[in-house]
Amino acid sequence: MGNKIRLTAAQAMVRWLSVQNNEEGQRFIDGVWAIFGHGNVAGLGEALQGMGDALPTWRGQNEQTMAHAAIAFAKGNARRRAQAVTTSIGPGATNVVTAAALAHVNRLPLLVIAGDVFANRRPDPVLQQIEDFDDGTVSANDCFRPVVRYFDRITRPEHLLTALPRAMQVMTDPANCGPVCLSFCQDVQAEAYDWPDAFLEPRIWRIRRSQPDRAELAEVAEMIRGAKSPVIVAGGGVIYSGAEDTLSAFATRHNIPVIETQAGKSALAQDHVMNYGAAGVDGSGAANSMAAQADLVIAIGTRLQDFTTGSRTLFGDAQLAGINIQPYDAAKHGGVTLVADAREALDALTAALGDYRADAADPAIRASWLAAVDGHCAAPCDTNALPTDAQVIGAVQRATGPDAVAMCAAGTMPGALKLLWQPSRHGYHMEYGFSCMGYEIAGAMGLKLARPDREVICFVGDGSYMMANSELATAVMRRVPFTVVLTDNRGYGCINRLQQGTGGVPFNNLYVDSNIEVQPQIDFVGHAASMGAHAVKAGGIAELEAEIAKARDRDIPTVIVIDTTAAPGPGDGLEGAGHWWDVAVPEVGETDKLRDAYEVYLKNAAKQRLVN
Image (cartoon, rainbow, N blue to C red):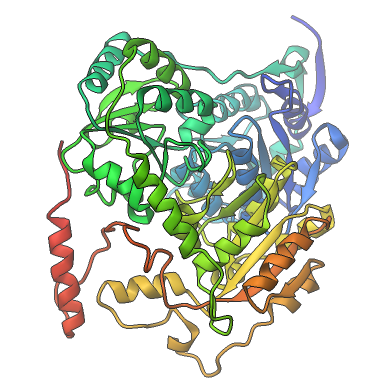
């Protein structure tokens, strides 16, 4: 029968997590972000305190942003490590729902240990309990069900014997990877049980590499051999597979241009001869030119969201082959599927294709585009004018070294960075599956914890900064250095442009167009400094470059504020940049501008490819 040890359920959980390792021998759950309340302080709090450095606990400022940091850590580790977040019941738990949705959309591991009501129901209703008048089993944590890959409510200690391995299986499954919520009843956390010693033994979790099916491989190889102008769309799955070198060799050997999604950008460095840049709505002239003339699109490790496909108008009549570990994604848009690990699929295709070479890649298109980007991002001649986002990006690019990682999540900057940032390999980190405002600063901290060897540059607009900035204080306390470039265009400049581009008038986005009595004069430098960060206002592009260089020598975050214009978009004036995006325009309205926008909308919508 073996020996047993008597522990509370919470003590057993944290001991178990502390000995779950990845293939490199690292603890898979690096540690636990915690804000304690009555739903987790007595049970999990006591258990975590007893673990010490064997499973470290970190205090954050907000449950959602703690989870953002954990997600960025997982993304920065290419899903090979993760972090946990524990909350009390009620608002502490529901604060994490948005972050769980972010992890779900982006296919990233996150362990949420949410305190719950009493399983024995004696004190019902307990403080912060949500009562469903028709279902006595419902609690606030049921909000997690649609936004996690695995949900379990722990109402008996022995439930952990199955729930914990299932949670790890999900987080290490390349096809089903995503967030997990273990809803942990607070009385059960403190309940003792006799645990088998074998349950608490160390375990290694390997991420499987699924091999391609022979028939699917033969079909896709035949499609490639028959194509004259194929193009590869590289998604985040390339990076999670560790297939960067394989993709580089495959594209070069077969002369197939590579275009990038937000998640796939920097799988190949920008200076790779087969990298034609960003695809789609926020795409480069070179990439979208390759896509438009392609007779075969080879989508590798991508969800093919609307920004990548130009809302299904970018790829014309090209055939589509979907190479993906997840069959759901491989089959999108009617693609011919090759369900396999990206690296294994490319190796197998290389063997099947022999000396096949496409004839579509024109290096002059790529060179012309990169030259245009350099001009677009150059320092402004008029130093009195507010700089554009492109000029800010150019300044940061010039002031950083080859190890710099640009990161962002929402607003104008994601499109601008995808279009204009020229990274080295792994020099780009974008959360654009959920495009969650407020991810940026917490995400920069998590990314720096994952990649301490890289210079992390966090681009954030004033709108996103106002939504969530408190983990800046956490980064100061933990001495996690990164650089925040805070572009202030006095409101939600990105959505203001979209509002006008779809026939509307400026309304409720920029402060000047909002129903307020006084225009705010927010002292972002003073605010960031009050949390302990080094903060400074850059008077222009030259000062921005100088402050970026100074920040490298600090062991705390640096916040550099710079005023920017709200008017032009990231690719305005840049020939060939961008593509149509389907944002529904009102069918009827009062202005000629709106009616004209609707006519343009109809013309573009007619090009959408709904069936292959």
